Image (cartoon, rainbow, N blue to C red):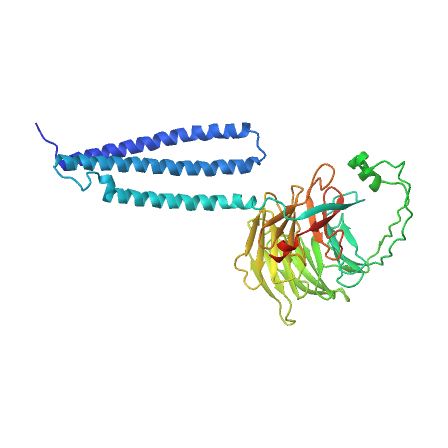
Length: 471
């Protein structure tokens, strides 16, 4: 009878092992699709407050984890089979290993090393994959006291932008049917951007109304008894005389754009203004002469916003091309530009802080904080569950207010820690997309304003504990 040599026996066992391994993998792959389909059906049938897209991402991540553990389990089985095979061969040859068990020798060390490497790889992959999700739920408890103070109604269309004066008396300006409004830093002038390819400068005079006698409210129904939609109609379509003065002729008209002017702002000092347009250019004008000083070109798609530094001749423009650009006019002879590619979708706004920071928001549902001295990478990234519109940063408290497409307004500090979400219910808060936010540091009662497509602007009182401000 022919006797099978040791090498041929080992080769035959190796072939059987590979065949078994391939069968197990094939069996796993064949059932994986059925399991995924079943899990997705169960996912759609479950009642959860999480968005379907987020739940689907979680399911995919956990599926990856399960597959990693399956691979680890299969490798562990193969190692045990190899150990048993070697034990049988050594026993047949009359050899033994110290302790009588190879699992305590070199093979166990090899298996342990391989397992530790896979475990570390799995841990790193899982941590990287879930960090985006975990960061969005970080610091969910409110660290600020937020109260709705006043609702400003009267517009018959959505409000795109709002602004607050930096001097007394405090004036709130809202832009509906125009794209932007910004007040002069020291004088009673307002700058607006319009869809008719122009920007306008308006001069105004504010006269505070005389105090009215307190009316008898014993027969007046409470606001809680009036439906909110009725209040909108009453405020917007009243037949009584309108006591608010109106300005119908602007003092200056700025022309030269070939597309919609989406935003405009005053440079420090108020002698020049910058405008951003859908014609992919930003223009710098002289206020006194209305002449075009510079045309800032380079963006590949329509501009969405522009902002000026409060103390330096710096301008930042954002665009649908997923970039924002920093323009430096501090040297009168030249103006430099730096391009920053930190987002994957439209950059809806980028604003300066009083310090050396720029904060950018995007439709990719992220907000990033940048250091002007080193803008290679953001110093903080805030991940949200909805697109971010025109943001604003508090001068004194250094708090970022994020207006969202999903009707929410969230507050974060400069390090990316969530402080609060402004209250929203059927009786208060925005009912549609929130377009813009603006801080008012000098008003003790209302220090934050927001506006949206629900035709109203809202004044909020935000109180941050002193301990958090020190941090």
